[in-house]
Image (tube, rainbow, N blue to C red):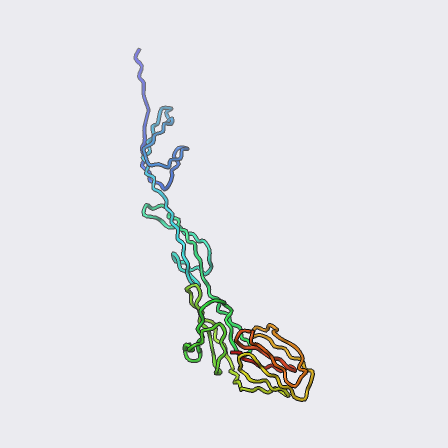
Length: 256
């Protein structure tokens, strides 16, 4: 008896390039190499499968950056500190995951108008007051947090903090001329300015209440004007501008 046997084994091969890993016939491969698997074919015989696999890797990078006000990165502009991510293709065609740790330094340019002075809110910075009406011309010597203009005009301050520079809005100010002696109703206050001792000389009205406040509105001294002359002693206080209120009228005192 002669038997004729027909063998129907077959094989296949494929070449694959993938990023990071590749799932093939239920197995996950993360390393380049040649892999084999055998499964039954339609005839019930072996089908030998061959995989030639090339694995390319994704990459990542990170950077820490400080900037002023805003920062542009990969086509986007950020105005808040935080951690940001972006994904772009690397040279292998896989993902390049980028991380940005951003610290934005913002200068507080807010300013308060107190009396006829301007006070920048930011403490401990560098200040330069500017004349807005003269194309933001630098005002020589005006480098303190507080600025009292000697002439009516429009003023702003340039503030430098943490290597960042920003400029405030402009403020219209009316300058008040100071005489050596100021008269309010029945009272004389002199000398003004002075190094610390102010004399209040009353008129016909007696037992009048007075209050002295700082440029920020804090009460410094108060009492009654019960004698012909009352001395206000500010020698132990900082140089600057104070406000004396008598009978609802306010006098600006300058200690230098």
